[in-house]
Amino acid sequence: MWTIMAIGVAVANAILLVSFAEQNRLKGATAPEAARAAAAERLRPVLMTSLAMTAGMVPMALAFGQGSEETAPLGRAVIGGLAVATVATLFLLPMVFGLVQRNASTGTRSLDPEDPDSKWFEQSSEVVR
Image (cartoon, rainbow, N blue to C red):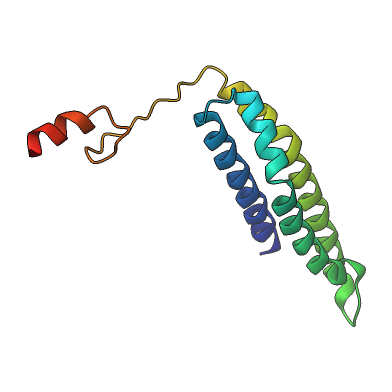
């Protein structure tokens, strides 16, 4: 259960970072610049989320209480996993985003006729009038 929670926090942080990087890229920044700016902008929320879960796991990792010696390794593993996931989110993910999105277009692929960025927008608005 704790593994699923730790992975959930890591994925939520990654989604947060990638969505901000994509917004920056669509505003005109190059992919590496967009990724670096997103990591800088989202540093505090990512750290707050990870540190909150880590702080919640500390009592479990320190094995306070009767019978808690059995669950202490699990707490330590979750704390270590969160630390690695946080570092990967803040350093590795922006590098991968910059490499993958370097040559990607910024045009929309929307087929929604009501989307102003869609290539079908003008045609559908003329038909309705």
